[in-house]
Length: 339
Image (cartoon, rainbow, N blue to C red; front, top):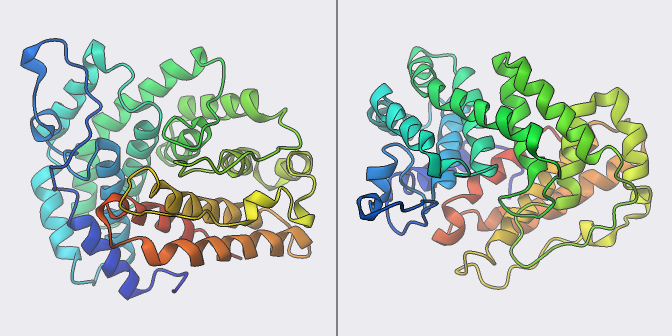
């Protein structure tokens, strides 16, 4: 399959996302009940992000739709995306989402995965060139600012990183939050993201890469590498990376180069492994971009990215357990330049 976002791929991803961002059920809530009055359905709790099986998948489903609309504004699905966004991304609906977040019982709501994705969604809307995009961006901004405040309160008291390959991974959340912070001019958040990354990961050496686990959709190893590339830039990344994966030119640790096997795509946790293959491809492409053209590790990284994309792209759509979120991870990978 194509490793670029051609028109056919964009339309396929858009149709999938349009089919799930307003699909309220089935739904897996991250919701604390303080009494019987809190026993409400997804749409009553979240008037924008009530679909896609869970709140965070709905957020990055919308990131997928807005990204596709910006890059392929003439596709047939663009009008449906805009019409649905006009209905949902209103100041009143955003105020309800902010009010839910303000509840004392919501302190840990979607931390940190959903936090990072909401900020990435805001960053995407902020770059839209057309007036409608700016209206949606302005409407959503209070929620993004609330999540920025959450990060600013949490990062100083977060002593340790979380290195799992699932929603709690701190490197992934920082990677997305930093993109928002820099594009929005939120220097306070950007500084906190960088300082946390340095505090948590700068002393990492000779990573053993004990992965994959059965339900991972992020590579604990490569996600740290991609974050540190983003934090350090080209000048500071190389010396750290040389010590972090010192045998990369020998394709070691070997597990990082073998796409994960997905035995049952109807099982939501096992389907995570398609996401692992896509997110590894994203990280490999990002890491390759920081290596010199004549560095032999660059070819190694780009080959690994291709192998993982080949394994996962045919399965982005087809079964709802993957279809409600995988297109977002496919876009992260294929929109990262390979050279």
